[in-house]
Image (cartoon, rainbow, N blue to C red):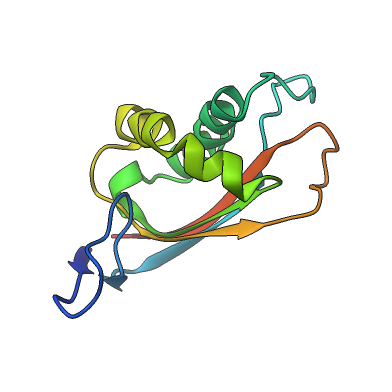
Length: 132
């Protein structure tokens, strides 16, 4: 499997994402939306950053169980109930991402949502990966 991260010089320099990812591989893994649910089905974490860390941990757990690694992610969408808070917390969210997933950023988008399936959830992540 190969991934080529493309960041054209004619676009604004990306910070914490890649503008495009070209993936060549044999297995696609589609990852369902993950919030900050613990193993018992309860949303944990009172802050956006705490919930983001748990949601990303859940997403990566699903990916690893499917045989992938964070470097195999080609697309992640973040749904946030407060985009302004997400932007304010972006430096800490970036540190959490790098701690859990490294510096190989997928193509990403942040989408504002009025509310998420889990009413207490502040953030949800979904995505897909390409495995060898």
